[in-house]
Image (cartoon, rainbow, N blue to C red; front, side):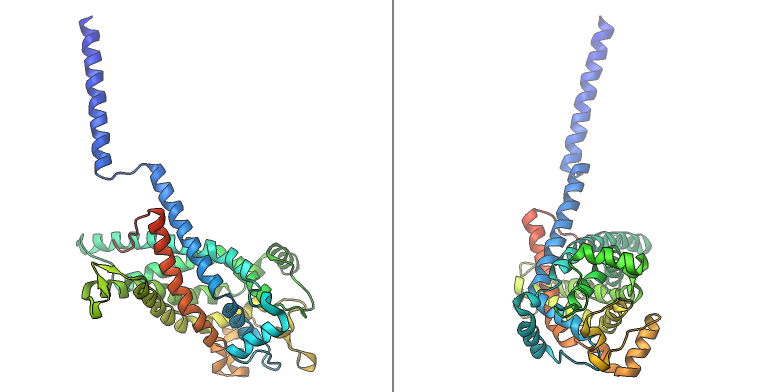
Length: 354
């Protein structure tokens, strides 16, 4: 009897000790696996919402940019931002301004979700190794390290959603007068797979990846570094209690978008042109009309660069830059701010730099 009482006492003590340790871990902030999964889901949702809202807001400019990039140089239909938007409105109506936006959102929502989440994870990983390498546990990410984290996030997101981007480009380019019509996302995907093979879904992938390194990398690096600089230096009274206003954060995002898209834009033009290669019965805006009709033939990224510059001049690498600038600046700004605001609403702690 005595031995049983001792065992019961030991069991009770062990239970109390275990409960005390669990309570201590809870106080120290150790979170259960279910919390981590929920946090990841909320982060992905915030990124997806940010992408969908920002792209829909500038959808007409996005479509015009692509039309300017790929139109046949011998049969000009779109000649500038204002004229181009008016022409789309006159020939295709209001819906024409948003053609391809459904596909774009279907691509950009997961792309944006993966991109923001990948950036956070890459930043934490890089910061961990940086602190281990320097021996300084208080070290913070430098602009160059943020550039690297952004580049990693961009490559992962681009590669994961590239087939949707390729199909979106073709849906955006086709008009009511196109010889052959893709009826939607899945019809376009199945048609490209059947007629051109699976490799066709990744046409233009290389210039896309090369372009996404400076584009996404600079977006994150400029945005985060500019925010940190404003918080530390507090110029012009823009910072109140270590918090930036929505307007100031929008300005930081606009600056980031301007720098990133200007550097990477030529690669975006080449990517779009490579995506049109092999498209039987392509839209007339690509092939041209009547006698001027000419097929697009590029053997690779370098060949596309060379032929574009040779036949259309260096300025052709920046076709559509104006509507793209008008589009990208507010789009990137809205994406960053929407992401942070949605995470605040969902109750997810934003910890990118530390």
